[in-house]
Length: 236
Ligand SMILES: C[S@@+](CC[C@H](N)C(=O)[O-])C[C@H]1O[C@@H](n2cnc3c(N)ncnc32)[C@H](O)[C@@H]1O
Image (tube, rainbow, N blue to C red; front, side):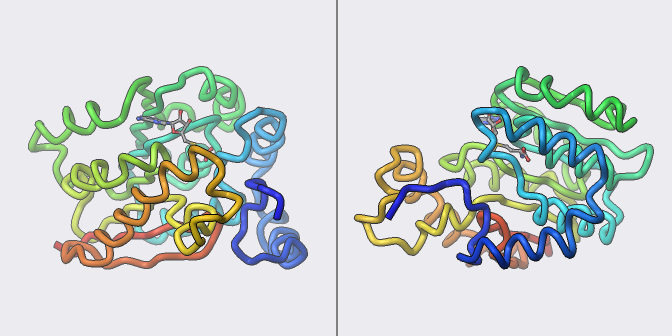
């Protein structure tokens, strides 16, 4: 079996995924997101960008919970960031963090042209120290409506320990890639597990998924969209 990270769906049918995109997602995808997706396609890390159907889901969730104050961990060129910025009201805010400003700046002109850059407070650097800094201030606890975590998978549990304090009761956390290319159920000799990064992160993703399943502070919904997203609604 060829090692292929490009199929963004666990449907195992490219035709069915294409059908969903063409009949539901693409006709409604804002022009700026189309542009950002096209720009990202040419970038070497393009496989990292949030797929369009997952973006559509995020957008709807953000509007349903009337999100205004959010955090994004893992920006890359900004597909999920722009999706979030478009879904928030004019005075909405996103605290966005990534260790790489260069990729963010690639997408920034499109974000600016879309008229939503004023909602974004981008911080370059590792996310953990920033989260630690945030939770030191009592005013930040429960202050966020939505947090999207899409960065280093081996830190997801560390992120959860902090993010759970920052999101409000009734607010939402989305953890991306929780099916980890399907390898959460793959045998050890699966071709994808020949890739060092996939192999390295798999035990962390497995441990993380187990921890979320028994965390009494959240209600979860593990969705098989994109590479798997686990939605956590904080309940206490
Ligand atoms: C999967 S990509 C994010 C994709 C993005 N959400 C999108 O829709 O295009 C993961 C990003 O996490 C960033 N990252 C990795 N480790 C990080 C860390 N410790 N702190 C902050 N960002 C990190 C990487 O630089 C990369 O841009």
